[in-house]
Length: 138
Image (cartoon, rainbow, N blue to C red; front, side):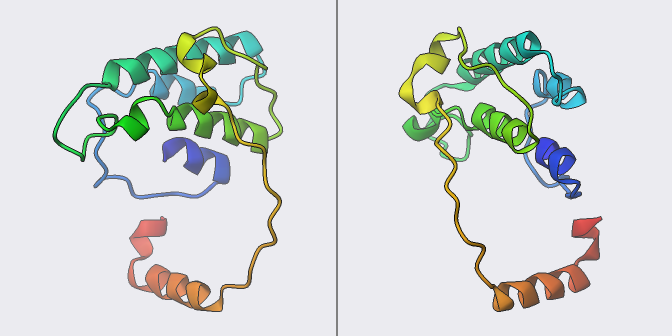
């Protein structure tokens, strides 16, 4: 959320979100996510993949982030960062050495160009929400 906020220029109130006690390596990456140093990007992706593996454990609590099969191997937090870099016209390495990044789920899908639909009802709901909960968009 914090990376997206930086990339988009939007602000989000995240005080009610659940975070791990230690946000590294994300906090390190957040400080310099737009780096042009591809070696640094590669190293950060490998650190994130290690972190992802450290978070995986089998649990009956489906509220934990990496405890179901669909999220154990899907590196969405890494792919999101790489996609944000792509949208910011920043280059990223073509490949990564980390074994987890070698699987087919660790590849960004090709962008799909879709027309932006008119959403008058959603626009009205968003305007009303901003009016009633202005602190959410501070």
